[in-house]
Image 1 (tube, helix red, strand yellow):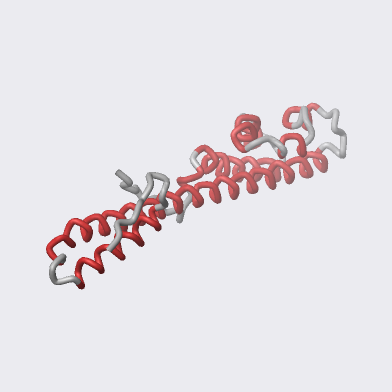
Image 2: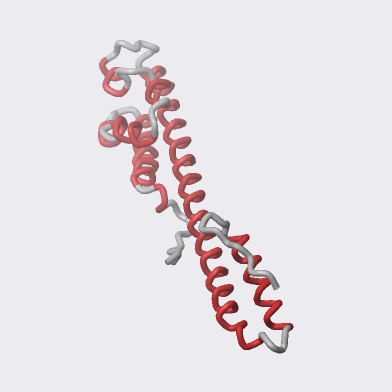
Length: 167
């Protein structure tokens, strides 16, 4: 049996395949069976690392999806607030009420990254909730909910977090 050359750049899958091959070769050879236990242990460790890597990657992708969802929700609320405010102020974009929220167009705020967008709308919640128009108060309440999720997107209900041990 030739000894395979595994480089430090070899993938975990390549390493695992070589371990399976080597373990099996040792186990079927009566003269080499006693050499198999260390390989079996390495193979078990490789499985643990592979599962931990999968769990970590899963969590990373889930966090990205949660951030994208919160960003979409916030964008929708900013867009809806812009339309609602225009109705309230009779399309007067120079109205003090409109300018309190939109010194920039809603689309300019929507184009911001999530962190910047949250910072931009942070002060709107209390202000909207104190407006006399019920539609603005309702948007303030909805914005409060999205903003609290946006502050920690991975706290979104249903998002499972695992602690992966890759050491």
